[in-house]
Length: 188
Image 1 (cartoon, rainbow, N blue to C red):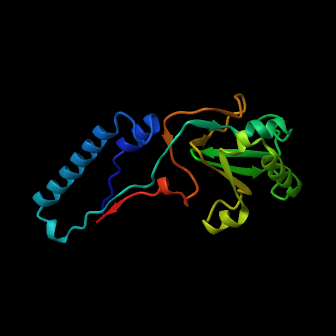
Image 2: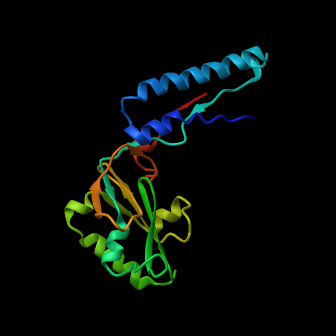
Image 3: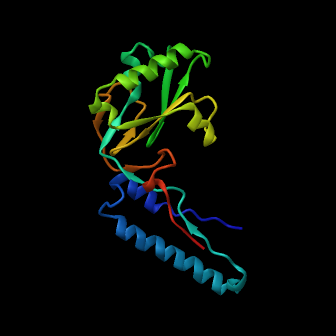
């Protein structure tokens, strides 16, 4: 058993998005690398008893907007500084995962949910709330009490010193797994 991770596509899509100017050349390079692997298998004389699987670990979304939900938490008095906070989002591309400093602080959780739902439509159009039931169904970190998944070209940042909603660029992954572009191919 051997795995090979060809990093080019991931890197280029982070920089330029799904259809960036360098995507086609990166596909050619990845295809060439697969060709070299196939040649090595044949030269080793193991072609007839080797299964070659080509797949991606995730898809990608183009990013046009960056959402920094910790700015809202700070504005709502739930983050004072790095050590003094009640709720905090940890971000990973198209996902933002909220933790409570006191995991039993249901009042803070309810406050955040209420305030997120009360944001202007101009902000809410960039995320969907992922509730506890959906998080448990996908095996999410049990410490995560709430998550956001980006929509309409949005990805997330953990920053607190920026506008809550700002321009974004490139591409990313990390979205809730029920979306089309996050799916990937599989060839065996």
